[in-house]
Length: 362
Image (cartoon, rainbow, N blue to C red; front, side, top):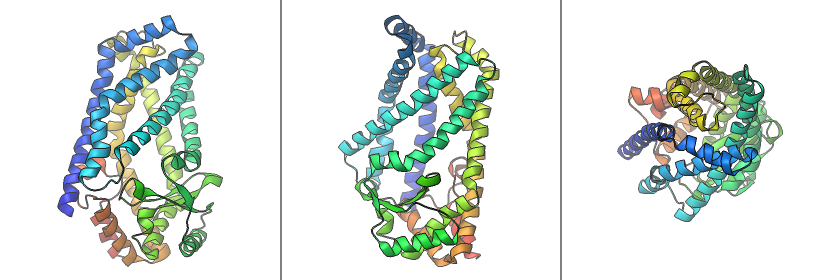
């Protein structure tokens, strides 16, 4: 099983690297070939100005999707079936792709439109104002995802096991967490992997359990999983991540503000306000993401260790925690003991074997 998990994980690591490099090459090609400039000119000649951003974004998004399609379908559909992790039909996969594409487009359209609007009316401090807007917008998204987005992909209903529900609610009360309720989703219609989440902000905060988790894990195991999720909230990890991500966003836009002139000239642009220069912004975010990835992963692993510790302290369910880690590792084909370099770049959670060894000390 672990050999199979290693093969699966190594393919995923490779595909992640290929996807990032391929995305950079495609964006560079859009710019160097003049496609971006010609598209912008064509739109300005044939359409009203307020349609420029929506049309440009729609066309380059569609072009990117088509060019990235072979990699996308292999990574998210073929590979999952190859390793017996997916139960999703090709038709269902296409339907989900359509939903994801439309949601991504709408979110991108809002962010990009506001970016150009602020760039026009606040040319000196646009990087600060845009950063603030993007941060606030992401907080709003965190609030609406459980209510609006999750039901688009899964059948959403209140947890039918009343005993399990009461146990989760007692745990939440014990850890001083206020939640709306507990819900279950039909994960098994698409995947054999297991998952649980504590989502939402304010009055949308809720527990979501996959049916693949409910069916195969004991009450103790589910409790310790959710104790871990509640621990993140109790330790204010979510707030800290908002601050960290806000600083990352601010840093990226400030870097664009200070250094984009050289790259704009390189591709024949005069100003960042030119619509055809939008791929330059995307390239900045990808490269900045690559540079900061190890740091973000390190911080995340630190948070996860703290959450594990508090979950064990709160429940005392050491044996359940260890059995849960082993089950999740096998069910999700996780790489339990990755190479240090793989861990350094890719792992936002400590490897499972490390988490088990730490739990044995309690």
